[in-house]
Length: 291
Image 1 (cartoon, one colour):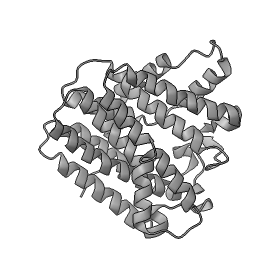
Image 2 (tube, rainbow, N blue to C red; image 1 turned 90 degrees about the horizontal axis):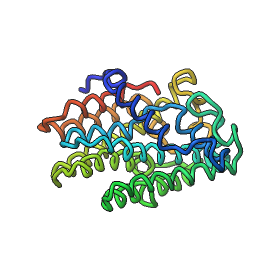
Image 3 (cartoon, rainbow, N blue to C red; image 1 turned 180 degrees about the vertical axis):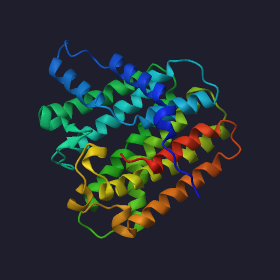
Image 4 (cartoon, rainbow, N blue to C red; image 1 turned 90 degrees about the vertical axis):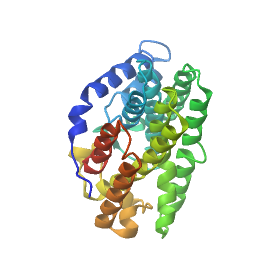
């Protein structure tokens, strides 16, 4: 059985601080033109968050021999893509949320058109940064993770499933695309940028796939059991929208058990990996988190 811990909150504190500083540096200054768009981009990206995707990419890069601090910029591109997806998810035509990370959602604070364009601009900036890596396979990997076979395809399936009875395999398919794909890619590209061998990259990819699915299952559970103080957003949205979730299909307790099973499976994949401890801590954090 997995032993949960909140250690990464402390252990990865310095990494997250550097990620936040890097994000502040790569985002356009609000004094530039068009200032309102840049202000909106910074509003959403710098509002906080777990930074799990860049943390995973950096951890994977370091664990497979990467030394260059440029990894922070490339890893932050993943956070820009994640934030763009959240901005668009919150729109009235999607989940119609009023709060994100404890503050009004971007379309509530600014306007719907600014929210759409800020998301688009973050998407474009992310690929401008990734292109600077000079690694076309990394760009391809991330593109696929957020495209029709990944995050965007999952979002389509997610919206289309609202209000319908769904089987567990359909929920899993949505989660694997909508959330797990980018988390898997985050782990994978860190190793790719470090020049790791194919076997190592493949194993980290498999770890990331299971971790990403466990992450979304816990998100589903927190929407049922969490609160605004911890989550920074209203709970119960999944039920209100009749979303396809694990708790809806198998209940909260079995959902937690499935997340734990996936994390244990992910750990087993890296059992003989020399740098496994950092990934084990991240895996434990995913199932222990309260937000």
